[in-house]
Image (cartoon, rainbow, N blue to C red; front, side, top):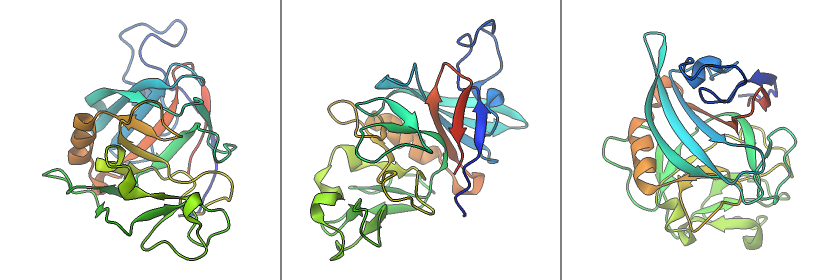
Length: 233
């Protein structure tokens, strides 16, 4: 899929957080300019761009109505959120935007009932973040010669965070060097992330059992202050 940044006016706000909106407003996905065209959507919402915590909610489109399937506390980057189209690598910020979810992965087996593509981590599994490498922002096995170990994540070293995870399609289809690599939805670690979105282990398992590639799931990341300029990939 060609990388096509489209600036959208997206209302990423829960009921009651937009001025003059009544508490009984429509569900959040109905207030978005774009939900990716599928029938599954994950919303990752922070109170503001400086926040390191917020909420992840997953929604299903049923007979034209978005229904909330679950919700969980979430963590974001240690330096808050940044616009995906202009984010810089190694800034500890979570990129805002609308992204697909290419595949899932984890240290252990996929939760029972998972139908989303799932890869098992082993000792040879790395995520290359070296801007000079051909495999920039890709899973590699083994680590290629042009990807420095200091510029890559040895996935098995993150046993708690990567017990279960979903790849977020930020800067993935046609990577821009210096924009950032290795942005995932994964299990909580000890605190804020280096740019990913994280949730509790139970919530991560529930999301993986729910996610169905046939329903074209997407994730939208933003703040509740809306409207927010969000880049679609």
